[in-house]
Image 1 (cartoon, rainbow, N blue to C red):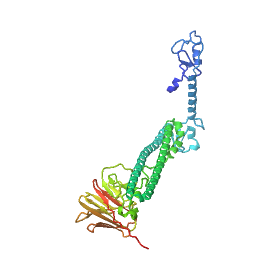
Image 2: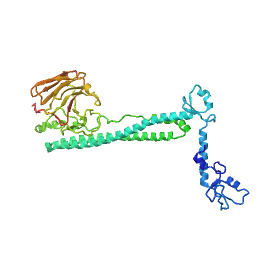
Image 3: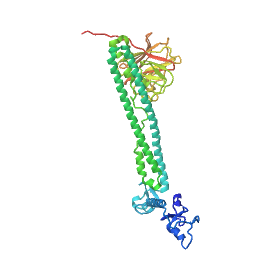
Image 4: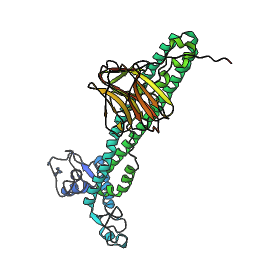
Amino acid sequence: MASKLEEDLSCPICLDIFKDPVMLTCSHSFCRACVEKSWKDKVSKDCPLCKKRHSKPWLPPDLSLKILCETFLQERDQRASEDLCSLHQEKLRLFCLDHQEPVCHVCRDSKKHSSHQFRPIDEAAEEHKKNLEETLQLIKEKIKALNETEVKFDQAEAHIKVQARHTESQIKGQFEKLHQFLVEEEEARLQALREEEEQKRQRMKVQMEALRAQIADLSQTVRATEDQLKAQDISFLKNYKAAVERVKQRPLLDETRLPSGALIDQAKHLGNLGFNIWTKMKDLVSYTPVILDRNTAGSRLILSEDLTTVRGGEKQQLPDNPERTDYPWSVLSSVGFDSGTHSWDVQVRDCRWWYLGVLAESVQREGDIESGLWRVWFWGGEYRAQSPPHGPTDLSLKNSPKRIRVTLDCNGGKLLFSDPDTNTLIHSFKHTFSQRMIPYFMCGSGDILRVLPEKVSVTVGLN
């Protein structure tokens, strides 16, 4: 059956593609030979279709129609040649599953294709198009995921900028209290912050450029493959192996999270800032043995400016960085311990519930972290303790402590929880801590936990 285009390019008289087309004054077109033959032995030169008289003494050529017909014939001849086997000039009606190529009936019976499996062209084309579309769908889904990741990276970059400005403000505030003689120290710390900000923003920009490049590359592959899917069956199957190879060469990486350490390390800039200069102005500073890490704080926690106090509050929108756990009420210390003895006091008074303990550094922050968590907690008026892999243990306390002292003896393999106000042991764990342990904190909405500062003194030795 002729296509609509072929019908439009056919002479109404001979019903074949126009040859040397001419246009009558009524705008109908015919082959020159056809219309001249129809007028033979006729006095009146009327249009064979509408019967209107042709008023001109000559037959003007229809050049536009002639070009269209010639182009159509060339393309039709090219398509016809593509449908033929290059070896046997037979119609390509089969597809060899072993060689993944169209073949003719002679090819099927040849030695080259002995014992091979074949499918009709239409069945093979349908099956392979389906396979390629499924692979293409994976790339489209990956592009969608990468676009979502790009949004996260944009948000993270904005968060880094806010962190940097916020940290800068805090640093300036502390240095203002220390007055002029600390100007040089202040500038040194601000410079370190600016360098880290620039480094991490540049690193983020590099990540984003790589992400955009991957999106563009995959998008180009999608467009090229979709164009291939629109091709005729024979043309599609001839280029199928190349199309599949092009698609498979595009790795579907799974980089949908921020890299570790992407955010500003605020604890490095703010943690124990005053302690680092306390030898000059010890009366104006305090030292806190454990500094909270804002990059690990859950979405329901608010940290104080000096990173020593945590309060439960409304949910916040935070970057999905790998340092953060899945628990919206938890936060970790900025440092961990793997040797020596360390202790820190936490003010827990008036808290409706709280968790205190240490978390093994190797534990994956995403998912259940209880396999590496040693802790004591207060919930529903009851005190309990738990360590892996054991279940919780009920604790009996005569008085509710206002402060909890956590003591980690890495070398001795002990973790102690006590009430420093009454010098009473609450609970102890014995374990060989073979890796770095990080102080862990949890509290509920409206509750406040504060890591208390230690008293500091200066001893000057005389030579």
